[in-house]
Image (cartoon, rainbow, N blue to C red):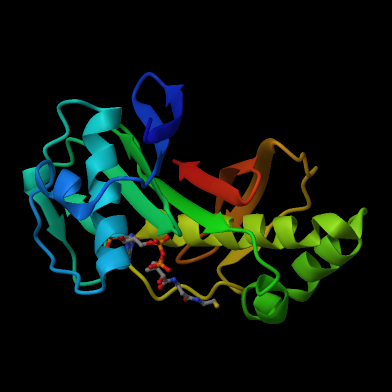
Length: 209
Ligand SMILES: CC(C)(COP(=O)(O)OP(=O)(O)OC[C@H]1O[C@@H](n2cnc3c(N)ncnc32)[C@H](O)[C@@H]1OP(=O)(O)O)[C@@H](O)C(=O)NCCC(=O)NCCS
């Protein structure tokens, strides 16, 4: 059962996670490949991410996907807005016929602790470091990284400063999932609601706006 999670967010927007167990040949029979990825596992992740889209919406036109200079994949006619992410043996995707979307999936590891100052402001760091119990810190840091990656993809035009342009407001951490308000300050100010789900070793974050 490769589709391990599906969330019908609303009438027009769905997200899902695929656990990659299949060989590349399985995906190649379903996915028209536009961008050749030489590393075998990255290729598998890339194909699985594409394969998820018609699992969410059966009429998703995979063959019409284009790739912008920023590397954002898109459909010219915007029949669907969509976003893809992968990590380890997982691929995630979100698609919407009405709203711009961004998604990120991350494995929780202790490595995030060493780079936290590269993507979190002093205020955001203080929020995490004052959270109890401290054993949840790696998960919280991974969620906050995932939220900012999801916004980066939702925006799509690159040139985002993760500290200056995105400010996560203090939120109530729930071990299974929840939401956080995030100010996005590129060009003008916009308040976004970010969502996360926590499953054992992975976290999924997304934005719809
Ligand atoms: C582009 C970026 C978001 C991709 O992340 P990644 O580590 O490869 O991880 P993911 O698997 O989550 O995402 C990859 C997918 O993002 C999508 N993507 C790539 N560039 C994108 C962009 N500019 N906008 C939207 N989506 C994009 C693609 O669908 C890609 O998968 P695919 O090539 O198989 O289709 C990331 O590399 C990046 O540049 N982040 C910003 C880094 C930064 O500024 N950091 C500063 C603070 S440390």
